[in-house]
Length: 111
Length: 116
Figure 1 (cartoon, chains in turn cyan, orange):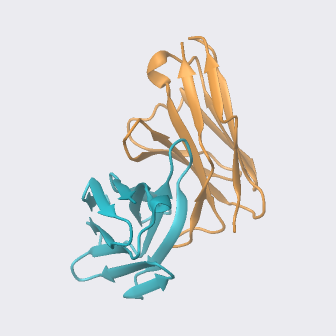
Figure 2 (cartoon, rainbow over the protein chains, first blue to last red):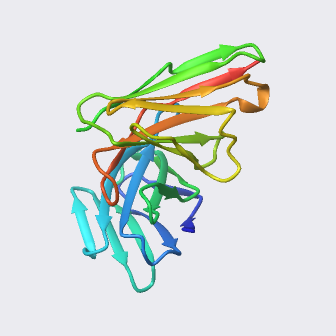
């Protein structure tokens, strides 16, 4: 089955810096890769996603890149702000419809 | 955007009690809903896939008799934790998508279950 590895587990940056979180997946059949932001006591919120027919997608300060050959995808946050502090999860879909999640990255943005 | 509502948000009950958690898709029809469990500072672990009008598909290691799932309509799925014990205490989260495959899933805000 699908396995998703996520790094780093924690990331601390200064406000205004960029943050990059990386994930790898194992199942070459996976074709959908969402990223979620989870704040304390809340459910995950979808922030951006990418499908396997696209190499890069951008939405304001957030971008995601996908390398199908390497089975690798990354989240890039530019001009980080304190409100970006949260836990971020990458995920990949399985042969069915479910998502398999990475272990999460705790991002801390200090002002 | 798509809204998924989960209720209750927090429940505390005695050991041996059964607890029902509801998950509703408010502005779209969800043929498939998913139930996850999350321990503190850990990732989301898929428990089961809930399909409208049919039996749920459980992940390996999840007791189907302990975690009863019903998906009676395209907007409502329920998870019942039967005869709950302290080890069942956790954060339970549901998600729903408009379609299957490579479509976005939207999550509820979770239910924190504490069994005394």
